[in-house]
Length: 177
Image 1 (tube, rainbow, N blue to C red):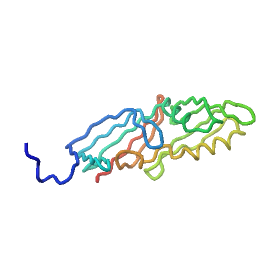
Image 2: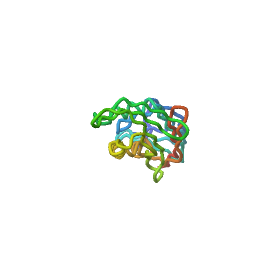
Image 3: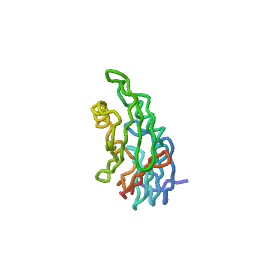
Image 4: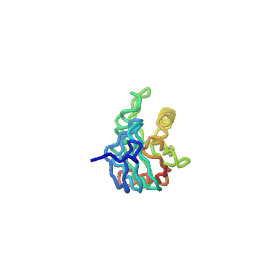
């Protein structure tokens, strides 16, 4: 079979994409349980690797409370540990052991917000032990943004985030390129 002489690069193309990826590890170490991509005119370039669409598409990322707890456990300093995470009613509730002068179990309540359609950040709503506020605020500052659109495999503008039934679901529009 002869090669198509009109193709000048080594990109892979498909008319439509409707894909679900699971256990997607992002550069910051966060593992998305599921990443759904939908759109038209898919182009995959091998080097450097990139995905693009010819028209706007949709993206849905799902992060379970268990995956967020594992990420927090792996990325937190040794004075924070034993994370238990709940995602429900639009909030993320984290119970964590904090080592200060003594070890205390602290409940942290966060609200997730999208900034500039590009970053998912956690905003502190409350801390059950006021003397742990400094430790919690410092760690939160180092973790934010929880997700940056630059970490995603396609250019995307974040549109909505919800926290319910034990998971965080982010929706975004994939930009054509």
